[in-house]
Image (cartoon, rainbow, N blue to C red; front, side):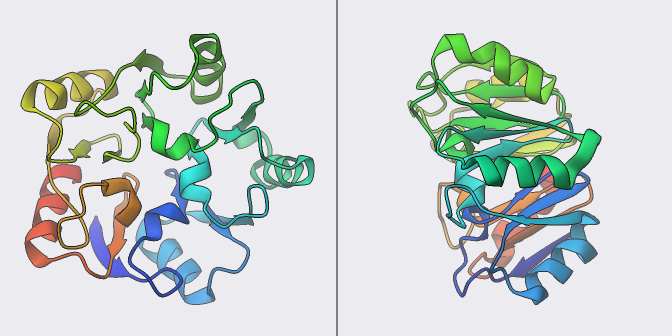
Length: 224
């Protein structure tokens, strides 16, 4: 498993543009071919080019694991149809139509074993999240923040969380996501919003080009 530094649209915030699982990566229509090849090589995923509400910010506007994809209610009908057709019967694609918040990637931290959901998402939507991702769902803040998805990244091995999260919360999140390793770190020279600068699955990770050597060592040790 490798951790590779890369670019996305000329900036280090690749996590806001990309969403990945162990088998599929959602990338913007306009993403360069070089980025697509890097994803295929390092994460061993099939590429699906799409948009959400005509936006390339897929990492912010959706959340996914190997079981399903959750989209916000701003998703256009043709975008949802295209995504469903692209993934076929391998994954469930659900739209949280009755949820006002649309930045689901910032509000849900998930892997294939569990999900931590922000209290900003109403409780009536939790069952739909359970059904789509096929995992246990727990609603909680992390680091006194409702942006639980923005503060971390997880695969089925490990969990990396922002320094604003305390040790008890790290242990709590690790139990919910059922990972064997967990820890604190940053990306892109101290950015505490880890999701903005990294995408990872069980096979590898890509990080923004401003990520330091010390940060890379921490990411590698925690996730793999």
